[in-house]
Length: 441
Image (tube, rainbow, N blue to C red):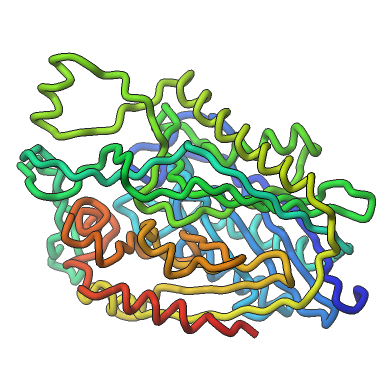
């Protein structure tokens, strides 16, 4: 048992790089990955307070965690004596990992063998971070980065856009139809919006042992990991680049938990290399678009973000170390998915989770891809908003974005296996769910 008021820590990492062919999740791929660009991992930090209560924060290099994997990890944690609300499982949202989410097969067909592989390794990770705790000090630092940019841009002219639809398959299910190319007018295009909301903040928590050695890192940023130039290669994307830099500084194998923010409408800031008449004509036909990174450009972008994270690390190291102390508290509330998408399958829920670790971490997680307009409904002093938690159903736009339309409002739903449209007035649902987390215990 740790000393009164002191929270002890255990941290670990496990490799989940696939060892067999499987389609990658994201971008609606239909082909298997072709090579490993960088390893993908699951990282976790476990905590134990003076009463013996334990909690775990898990970060997985996946597009989504999905219901099957989350259930396996929660079951393992509960078997180890944890409360269900004391395990916080989130995806980094890399678009370059095999799918483990059977609810979104249209984004990439899930491999049962890979799900079993990740669940087995994740289970052993849970075991490792729920034993052998050691007293810990924590330092919190902050910084910023211009790596991300809002991706919803109003465009006054008609343009061509890919369109998908779900149609009944005759057997009680749905089949994806498309893409068809249709003229579009009056909806937000997926293109750089310099004036749109984004979150430049970087937050870093350094966990150190009694001798001052860093034993784990938790960091938070808000940006889609979609910039890697090879669409068919496995990679952890920028979370892996930052992880490698942290390990180069603090030691090989360092557990690094990355928590993704409300990144539904934020993606990498790609320099626009196109110019001239051809570019202007293309914009008239297909509307504004993001340029794509080449290999050198993506490495520069990810390297610059990594440097920004290291400056936040330096900020944390400049602060006095304090013993991680207090108590563990948590809260959980589930919203029926049919309250958001009335035509969705009954029985699915959208999880809202809060986990507070003493005076160091206070996380509010949402099982969705929340857009930036929802962040002010969560953020307050010391609270960190996290998206892509557990069974994330899809995009959650604020009411203010609904009239603008676009992919994050209605275009995403067929690819995510959701028929119909989102219900109106979802800000009230979001605020109510967050309010249910106000008093974790």
